[in-house]
Length: 394
Image (cartoon, rainbow, N blue to C red; front, side, top):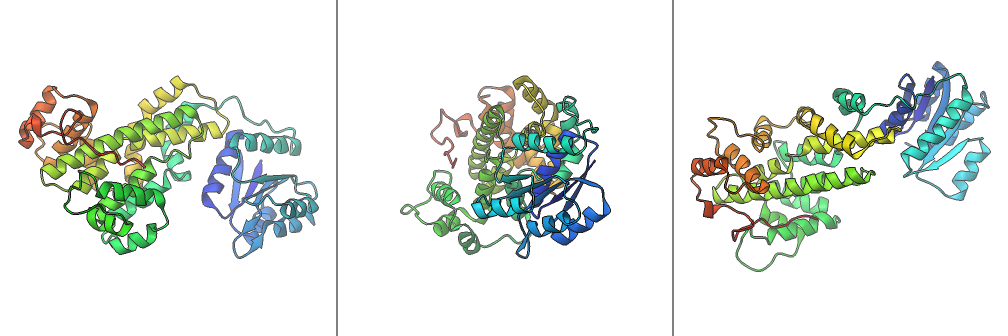
């Protein structure tokens, strides 16, 4: 069976492809971003279903493609997917015998059911797979998922900016973020917090805040916002877990930053690593959501066991895919284990911050780390001490 997707948004292409392959893993899915490319694929392949965006690049309309196809094929099922839901768009689509008109954003499960109806009607001999979706097999194919799907795009963009040789200036960031209330509020709050303890009056503008905390730390705040964004997750258990992971990472990052400040180490480096300790867990949650979007069913136990089994694998693959510097990878890994014989203070610091965040106040490991870093227990940030982390959640 062959389906054709004509859509210029790559993320939407990938979602629709996932839905189609969730119905039948043997399905051939062809994608095009323009009318010319779509028409060429339709001529070359025996297309059984067309999914077409209404608004395409260069002011083209998907109805032009539909009109060309209907001149030669009056039976092909056509589903128009668009951000427009006005009466004129619906009327024009009906004039060209479009079978379905779906407005973005849409419910993937509902769309999947409607697509299935048209595929079965077009070819009743086709056996649409539906009961053999397996969460384990779906999530285990890490390489394929990370190649086809765009996990946490905001986080990837933020990390790319953080790690590039010449990051933007404070002025450029202020111009770029001037209409973003979430990052503005977060940066002003951080600039006036105890972590960035400074003299003088309170800072009140975005540009002042960026200049005060520095470009590196400002970029890590954008990363924090991106990693804490749960809008991609529709399942309630996935949403709750994502919030838990974000809160835990935020706490660890703030402890790491406070320790770095006390030890006169790079605050932004340690803060960034702390934010990313749950990267793999969050990626698995997104993979599970995609499984659900494809028609799969999960229980809370399924979610818990899958995250536990695949978090490390997804985290490692994402670090490679995003080309994270080795030093950053090492700091993230050190939050789980600093390693025997390690003397790098930033690695020891990350492990100590993780112990504090976990509440291991009197553990032998924490005492050893304090000795290695030449810190007294009274020097440590924490709920029982004066210098506990500031909350910088949006």
